[in-house]
Every structure is written in C-alpha cells, then in structure tokens.
Image (cartoon, rainbow, N blue to C red):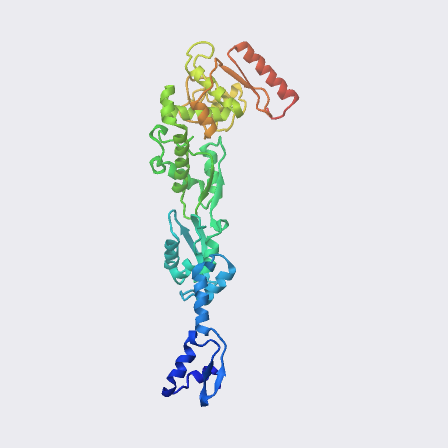
Amino acid sequence: MSDRDARYTLGADDSDQYDAYVDDEGVDDEEVPAEGGRRRKRGRSIPGCLAALVALALIAGGAYVAIDKGAEFIRDQFSTSPDYPGPGTGKVNFQVKDGDTVGAIGRNLKAKGVVQSVDAFMEAAGSSTNIQVGYYQLKKEMKASDAFDILSNPANIIKNTVTIIEGKQVSEILPLLAKATDYPVGAFEKVLQDPASIGLPEYADGNAEGYLFPSTYDFGPKDKPADMLKKMVDRWQQAADDAGLEEKAAALGYTPGEIMTVASLVEAEGRGDYRAQIARVIYNRLETPGYPTFGKLEIDASVNYALGRSGSTVITDEDKAAVEDSPYNLYSHEGLPPTPIEAPGDAAIEAALNPADGPWFFYVTVNLATGETKFTDSYDEFLSFKREYAEYCETQSDRC
C-alpha cells in the first residue's frame, strides 16, 4: 500500500499519527507511523491540487499576456467561460462602432450569435484595445479567440474605398461612386434632388457642385447613396471650417459661396505655387470694371463647363459662340459664374481666401510639363506670353 493509501485508512485511534502525517510543518523528513506500526521515511512533496492553485496564482499574478500563444494555451485549460469550439458557420456582418468597449463588443457578438459568452471574448481580448471601428465579416458560433483575431486585424475591415481627386465635377464623381458600390448613378442623382438631406449649406443654393470634397473615402457595406454624399459634404465642411471660410470671406468682401466659386476656378486654372497669384488675377478682374478686362474673367475652364466638358482645355471661337448666352461663358458675361465649376481641394480654397499681392490682370501657363505660369498687368506682355506658349506647343509638346 502506498503512503497515499495509508493516509486514508487510518483508524480513529490513529488520529495523532494522521495529524503528524498531514501537518506540513511537522513532517520534516521524520518517520511517520503507517499500518502495522511500521515507520517509513517520507520526503517533502506538494499535493496535486496545490500545484494547480500555484499555476493559477502565476496566471493571476501577471504571467498572462493577451495574445501570447503560451498564455492562450493555459487559458484554454483553466477557463470555464462557455465557448464554442469553432470554426463557425455562415456569415455575419458585424459592426464595431465608435466608442465601443471590449465588453460592449462582446455583448454585441453574443447577441449576433457569434460567440457563446461575453466572458470568453473578454478573456480572448485581455487588455488589448487593438480593435478599430468598421464592419467585419464573422461567422455564427465562432471560438472567441478566433473572433478576436479577426477583429484585431484592421486588414479585415470591410469597406468600399473610392478616391476623388481635385477638380472633378459632380457628373464625374457620381460614376466613380457607383463603380465603387452596388448603387447605380441614378440613385445618387436622386439624392441630389433633396440637397437638405446631405447637409449642403444655404449658400450652395441646392447645387452640390464644388461641395463634394475631393478625398479618399472608405464606405461601409451599409452606407447608402445619401450616406456617402453626406460624408463628402461633411468632409467639405471640415475643410471649410479649418480654412476659416466664412470669416475670411467676409474680410475679403465676398460670400462663402462666391469664395467657393473662386476656389473652383483656381483649381481649374492653377497648380503649385501659382494658385495664390491666379486668385489675385481673378479678384483684380472682378474688382476693376474698366480697362483692361472690363470685369470679365475670360476663363476657358468655365466655358468648357458650359459645354459639358471638364478641365481647362483651350477653347475656340466656335466654342464660345455655342454657349454665348450661358452665364458660365465668362467671355460674354461679367463677374463670377453662378456656381463652382468643379470640386476645389484644400490648396485652392486656401488660395482663394489668401490671394497673393500683385497688380496682375493676365497669366499664361507657358510650359504644361512644369506648370510654369507667367503673370503681368500689361496686355502687350500678355500677348508675348501667348506667343511663347504657342511656340512651346509647336516644338515641345503634343498636349496643347
């Protein structure tokens, strides 16, 4: 019979011997009575249940690390939180919202049938906060640690990414949104018929041109056309607030809507460090009713807008005549066009609000590759710039 067996077969008269046996402080390699009065040597040992308690104490004392694989193994052995074995079935689109705590995420996962218990997910997550806002594809009845692995990797966020570059018109932006989503162009056009639904400012007069801000957007799987367009207008509002649009417009003597129109013209005509100078030319022309331009901006990009084109492609006399009555024909009409002609970015808005100082009325981009642009207040010098540009087109470029 082993020592362990002897311990549990002691009689009532053997209580002193039993006490000596189990008293750890009194069993220091002494001889302990066993059956038949024989005495046996016993070395110090730790009972099995005490060993388990020691292991648990090590875990509670800091040996636990949330994503460490060794700790995960220990957790799996000792955790009593209900957990599915995984890997799960089906598909669940799960959203992590801004402000969600790990506990809130766990409760939402349980409500969706993804994990079996909130505790199992919280044990899997540990102290981690590496879960980003967005939509994720999960399964029903997943192992909590598998669900956490997906949620803690930003690469698993479901999104439709679309980039809108500066200078795009609404007619160009809507097809880009349609291509990146499952909605037709007509669905976006319908939203624009209710401009209040996307948060356009009053001075936009219900026209979204110029207010769908150029940027990169990540749209979630539940975003509808109205949500997407509103996000773009919200992004424009952020840019306008950052630039101080309303305050600086008032200081310049213009409405915010007029500044946005100026910014769109600057976006169409300018590039690089020349934007602020082009803005100054526009203001000089607007504010000088007589010679040399008589209040006319004569900007080709606006005529192209009237023609249903985009960009600042050089126009012909026939082009001008085709849209002579259009308020966007800035050769035949004084002042600004009635709306922006495209979406300006941060740099163009900044230039419109902070024009350079100078007397210029004319400018010509004489090199399309470098964007070099020359400015003057002399009509004769302006004509010389035009000849320089024509020579450039004949000898150095086929882009004219």
